[in-house]
Length: 224
Ligand SMILES: Nc1ncnc2c1ncn2[C@@H]1O[C@H](COP(=O)(O)OP(=O)(O)O)[C@@H](O)[C@H]1O
Ligand SMILES: [Mg+2]
Image (cartoon, rainbow, N blue to C red; front, side, top):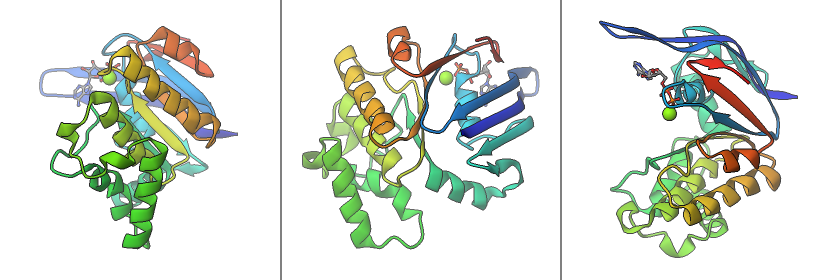
């Protein structure tokens, strides 16, 4: 069963001087529970693809279907709510909020969700931080953590709302190989133990070979 389907997706960025075709006629199906790697040279459209799958950006043409919902007809607030429930994001540079401590960063997705009490939020934060080995860092600020710890906080934030889909854009790109391996182990756990569908952009062939499938891009086109 496909959980993510892209049909004839094109993305054109227009600025005053230039027009960039960032994605050209992309057709892609990702199955529920699959761990897919996206590879290709810098500028080939990988982040654009992930942002479109994650409903952070919209295609210029074509359709995105996620869990039977075609997203093209949703308004902004429907998109935010859908994204909040179903999609977790992990970025290369962590995107943590420096003025919030670890627990506050991790709690953010639940703060935007109606019907979650403060008590439930605290319990859930404690649970995911324990799982990621960070319960002793709850009151630390991002600036006081190593890169690997920051990425684990970002993963905790990505999964606290229990999304079925986790999107990771070069999640180990800013980490040394040991910390990168820790992050990869966690992503594999989220896939194998929780059954989450994972789409990861990576430049690392050996990481990619550990996933179910590699999709390669070149100049906005899917080449393999
Ligand atoms: N917001 C934007 N405005 C204009 N051009 C963009 C924008 N985002 C990306 N691009 C262009 O689209 C292409 C694909 O970018 P991107 O998806 O970031 O590639 P990758 O992640 O594979 O390095 C590049 O040529 C890039 O310069
Ligand atoms: Mg990118």
